[in-house]
Amino acid sequence: MRDHIINTAYELFSRQGVRGVGVDDLIAASGVAISTFYRHFRSKDDLVLAYLGHRFTERQTAISAALNHRDDLENLVLTVFDVFDGWFRQRSPEVVGLLQVLIEMGPEHPLGQASAAYLSQTRMGLQEAAAAAGLHDPEGFAWSCHAIIQGSIVADREGDPDAAEHGRRLAELLMREHRAAEPDPQGQDLAS
Image (tube, rainbow, N blue to C red; front, side, top):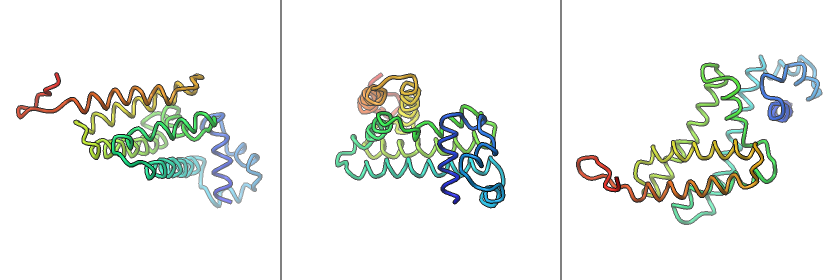
């Protein structure tokens, strides 16, 4: 029943936003009794936290599965765009949850903070992949690549059918820049 409520919430939150959906809407859409809802979730915020965790886990599982089919390290970094492309083409609400809640609730709200923490974990995964690929400044690369991913999400929602492919091309350019930049002993980039 808990998963049923989370999945129902996901559909509603994806279409109407977190603030646009009340507990009464969640109870009606999921077809559960009020007592059942509150047995599983103390509040709507508790449900949103569970929804964020569930979606983050699903997202990471999908990306990990795609990564397991890659051999070369550089393509590992770009795999995330392949996964997002599949979601974009299916019109899956999968991609917007974390970013949507952060924007909607703001970084000071506990739900915004939870979203930011999940997004940070995504960025750390990008940083690890960049380091494994031997890219210079993996942390800087991860921040930039994450910005490209988030821009791709927005572009998809604006109607760009090739948002992930456009993002992938930008990430390839970014990778080229991070391969070319090698620090000298004084800490200056030789490519500068």
